[in-house]
Picture 1 (cartoon, helix red, strand yellow):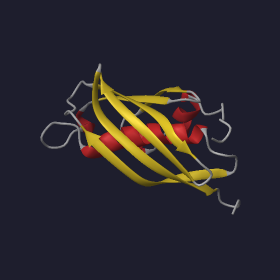
Picture 2 (cartoon, rainbow, N blue to C red):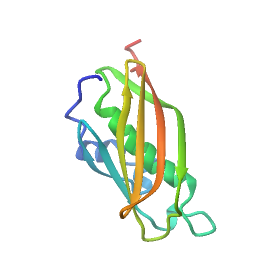
Picture 3 (cartoon, rainbow, N blue to C red):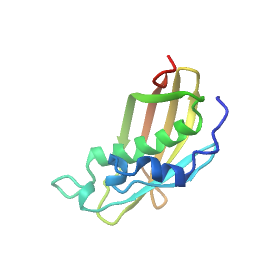
Picture 4 (cartoon, rainbow, N blue to C red):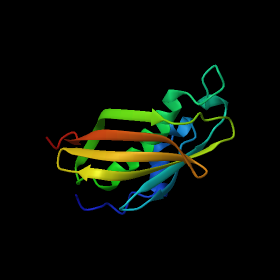
Length: 143
């Protein structure tokens, strides 16, 4: 696994995501360590589909964001990434007022791909699981 970047912190991530989709949806970074990243949303109207439950896109926005933070922590200098593949399973409906806590951990961190698993809990209950594959790329000018 590449050497972790300790400059990737909840504070640096708040600044990085300001004005983006995760920030607009209230995705909040809570913790970033070499082993895991944790974030949350408190479900409100912007997260719901017309039936009043959490929209699939909101589940993805939360889980993919937290996976990204774990990936950022382990990228080599001069590199970025893009999501290549993801698979989400939702086990229980999310409702207004629920606090959804997502925790991401690497399953694999190689030179060209990272695979991250994200488990989403509401209280003690596992309510969703995401597996995401990230494609590691040289940043512009680094090719």
